Amino acid sequence: MRRLFPSLPHGSAPETAPQAAPGTDAGAASSPQEDQSRWSVDELADAYAYPVQGQDAGRDGHPAYPVHSAHPGTSWLRANMVASLDGAAYHEGRSQPLSSDADMRIFGVLRGLADVVVVGAQTVRQEGYRPARAREAFAARREAAGQGPAPAIAVVSAGLDLDFSLPLFTEPLVPTLVVTGAGAPSDRIAAAREAGAEVVFAGEGAWVEPARVPVALAERGLRRQLTEGGPRLLGQFVAADALDELCLTVAPRLTSGDAPRIVNGPGLAVPSDFRLEGVLEEDGFLFTRYRRI
Ligand SMILES: NC(=O)c1ccc[n+]([C@@H]2O[C@H](COP(=O)([O-])OP(=O)(O)OC[C@H]3O[C@@H](n4cnc5c(N)ncnc54)[C@H](OP(=O)(O)O)[C@@H]3O)[C@@H](O)[C@H]2O)c1
Image (cartoon, rainbow, N blue to C red; front, side):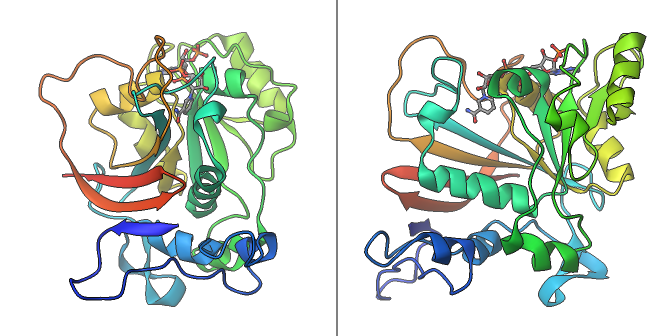
């Protein structure tokens, strides 16, 4: 993996990606013959660390909670998405055909850093979501930051047409959240609770008011927020001006067809501007990171 941006000062030796640190997941998984340039989990985690501030000092003296967000001092909402070169958010109903090994490593690192993963119900249904797992490589970092062993998954749904007998609801390390409106079907709310899910209300009707989601999660101490889409949920967050950061993988693949873009919602009256924060590259895949201005 190479860092393309921020670039090194002119005249410096070209940056070769760091070697995997001994004892990390990446180190264990690769040999020099396989991949000399794989970044360790810790190096990627540092590159993708949530912005921080305040007294609440955490790991390495870094303060423990995010700032400068759409909800200052309370939370930071980051999205992680992959798109084809021609802008498709999925191929044949799945994002996997657009992904790569490096994309999955970054996907895992972003989860490892998050308090909560917010996801739309259609992605849960389509991609067969399972509970997030605890990873040894993140154990010390998470403990130092006061986080649980794995991020909670928060499923956003109005109809609650979800299979509550799935491990996502019955076997998570930390209870799965179901984020819905107060007017959602009461029998489905009861079914979610019976399965062990925590129901979070963030709207008066059946639908969730997107701007209330980061606030409702932060009230539960879940401030480092990661949304994995899908495009319609992300469209809601963008329309509500609730997104702080976008981690976008650009896959060197064309799909054509009619799949939506990664943000699928009402057009904005005024486009929302983002600033480039970082670009990594591996096998032609670009791993970009943009922050809302
Ligand atoms: N490219 C990528 O990185 C990426 C990432 C994720 C997913 N995907 C792909 O995207 C597809 C699914 O995405 P999608 O856009 O169709 O759906 P989605 O955003 O995953 O989910 C839409 C559903 O979320 C719920 N929802 C959204 N906004 C809500 C609100 N304000 N209040 C209450 N509920 C709300 C509704 O659930 P109910 O219907 O239950 O009410 C809605 O039907 C899949 O093919 C998946 O593979 C791609």
